[in-house]
Figure (tube, rainbow, N blue to C red):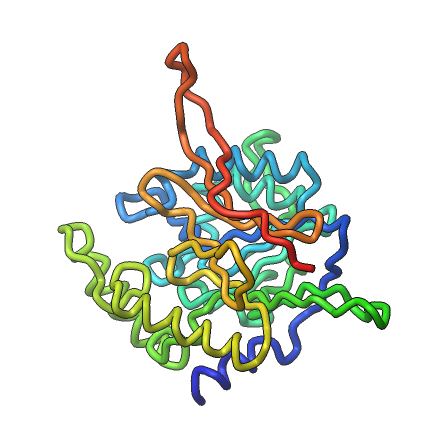
Length: 296
């Protein structure tokens, strides 16, 4: 199966979510939540992420995670990740209860595509607030793709559709051959990373692979006349003018997290980082990197 075929397949039975002037979505990717060890790349930004997540919950946004939310190549057990980052999953539960939570799978958490995975691994969590086990989201479905669409418009208004997926479909090694990549990451590159050696097969760490992946994703979107939004490469993309390809970035940048907000039929690329006030106190700040770019 070619990369184009894999991308087509991602949206074959993708759920359709409404896109209106009142819609509020935040698109996040590549959190890579781990188990709190030195290889847990999410740890350094966990406070930024939680502050951003609280903001989006209070402001009524629907949270859509575009894959690689949890690091299940380096780690085997989802329950350990939930225990370590229970505050995040506590907020996820609140989003879920209000039908404002959608989670896609990427290459690093591709095991979530199994039908029984939520019931087996995401059914409960230990809530630190209540100090007891509570239901999480056993009935949640992890999707490969989601389409945000205005639906059937009036005759004078063109329909707008946004195609959301992780983006690993552009790489044979990270899609069809993912078991081989997982083996290499788990038993070769993860130990070497602790010694300072970067994984040369990773789209996030190898610029040649990153560029190749983004070129293919952009070409697919152009030829299909679609607006494609992915993660995977960890490089945020939101051009000022009309474009076919966008990228949320990631939550494992050295000093910030990035995401794409969709509000009032426009997209904005933002970053959350730690900064200081005039009196030298620290606070988590939201900063617009690019946009808003109108979808109309």
